[in-house]
Length: 294
Image (cartoon, rainbow, N blue to C red; front, side, top):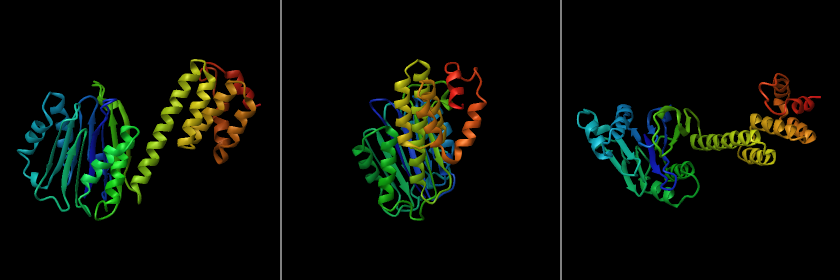
């Protein structure tokens, strides 16, 4: 039904879980994460209690193996379950029930564990190898692992849904508000391609938010450079509009107007949005932005 991977970045401490399945809404059911505590994948006749309760047990100090055993023991359908736990240190525990549909199995290595069921082939080793060999952020390495599983044949039924959760390695009491990435594709003919597009868009908005903070601090040149980096990842209208405002505030009105023109069919809507901005919305540069519309 599903393949998934749990991973940890030893440099940043980030923890993550990524999944793909020929099942609707799989990204809402399989992956679970809590900053500084751990990550869980619960699949094959998914029981979400393994995610919710499992993270509670890890947060209370249980090892992954102990947490998994406590939940699996009273589970009458344990033979149909496939579950994986990883804590903030990278320690893992996995279970593939004997009634899971083949190909079904799991594997683990340093800072990763992978599992799958109803697959065209034994893909879990390929996932671990791809994760280990990949470079970039934890999210990018998890995506590489999903691609490797699909290259092995993936879910024997095809593709439909996917999800990616990444959290900080530092514990946070606001656990439900501090995801590094929280992305999901519920229904798509190519969910991995769509999930990667969303990851690029998420990274682009991260750069755009950084650019706005840099601009507020007075470094307009650096802000413009960050906006361009964001647009290289995703040509998003909101990001391009923010670039136009930054250029206008920096006195580059011709360049700002050119960016507005590049908005194409979105131009008129964002010009109208700009007209509605008052001094309270533009603490610095209100007059310059009004000149942009002149």
